[in-house]
Image (spheres, rainbow over the protein chains, first blue to last red):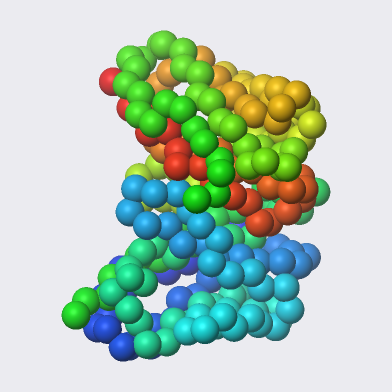
Length: 113
Length: 113
């Protein structure tokens, strides 16, 4: 099983739609989780962090299910500018003590008019 | 902008050559991590430097090496380049070595012919 696994999509949704991405992780000892956003040919940028059961920031909600070892990202009222690749990230997924970020392969989202 | 800079932006090399990529970390950050991102994949951790010492290493061969300088800037060196080394190389800086919040530079796109 991969350390971090995401559905690569792509997801094509109309403006205003609600879309959700899931991510599973293998190390049950992982404590913190992140969603990064990566625009085409750009660097990843931190979108949200998840330390407990969930986190909400405007139209974005991240949830954590420790029992099932998955994280989700919900985007409500999608905008054209939300089109990007969304990367699920688990620090130290392999049980290391340093800041190794383990990325999923990314989920591609395209929001169309 | 994150304040993390990388040079060069693009680079073309041939098999067997050696390459040096450079990164300047964000002001106040003492930790630099390097990642390789192949097309269509999430970034893969190469190694991390903390206070001028290698603090952790991913599954990359020894021909991938690095340095961190007293001002916390860093270099990634790759010897004996192979075609599969063609990728986007990302540098990320963070406040702490175990932090999941890392700030990425724009990357260096390396093409090996």
